[in-house]
Length: 159
Image 1 (tube, one colour):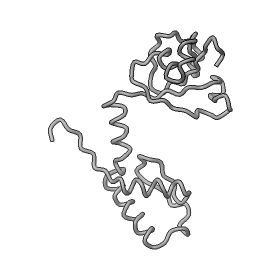
Image 2: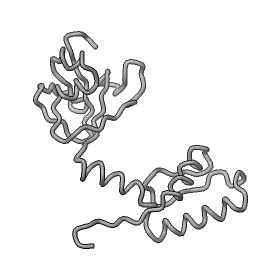
Image 3: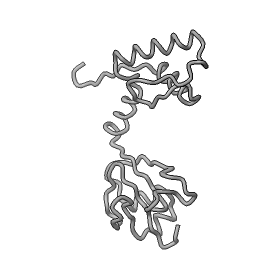
C-alpha cells in the first residue's frame, strides 16, 4: 500500500462508546485511547462484555480509528481549519453569554472578511475589521485566519 495511509477503524465500537458517554455511563471523548466506566450498575452482563472487548481493541490499536480518519480528512485532505467566532472578545461568548458555542470549518487561507461573509452576508458587507480575541489585536480584511483563531467581527451595522 505505497502512498496510502491505512487506518484500522471500528465504527461500531466508536458508536457504542459515544452512546454510553452521552448517557453518562462512561467517560470517553472521541479519539481517546481509553474510557472509564462511571456507572457500572447500569450495565448488564452483555454490555460489560462488549465494553471489555472494546477496551482490548483500544489497547491494541490506540483508538477506534474513527476520529483519526475524520481529523485526517478534515485537516490534511480537505485542508480545513477551525475558527471560533465570538460576540464578546473578553469573555469569549456569543450575544447570549454562551462560551465558544460555535466552531466553523473554513478552508486554509480564508480571510477575516471572507469569514464574516461565512457567518452572515450582512456581516461581510458591513465588515470594518476583526479582533483576535486572544491578543486583542485589530485585524484587517485581508488577515488570513489560522487554525484555532477566536475572532470577533466588527461591522458598521453593529452586529
